[in-house]
Image (cartoon, rainbow, N blue to C red):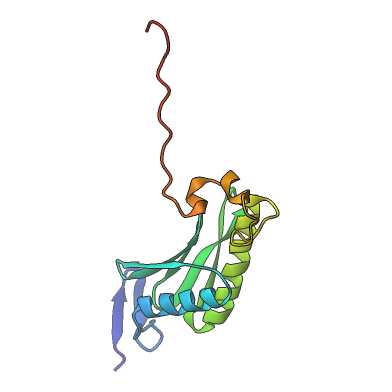
Length: 148
């Protein structure tokens, strides 16, 4: 007799149901190391049975222990984000694809300067403060002059 797992999407035979034996954090940390080898710094966060790899503004890679997925661009026709997904067994490919996406996002933010680490001295002052390894602070509000 075949045993079945009850899933929100219906009954699935347990021999084809995804069986997670590894914590998603382990795959996220593996991706983090692969990204570091490509010169991309990332942070790992864990919660609610997911691991998140925070790469860049607007670029987060989710991992549930079976797959990685991330926003790979924008679908102009539908007017919504386009997502990419790969199995965790392809962590090297995921790191390569995410590094390419990170480069695209940096190019959008900084123009043709794609590597913030390769700036000339004095050039860093024109970047947003958060990119100069400082905490971003809100400017002081201007006080009205004259009678109010």
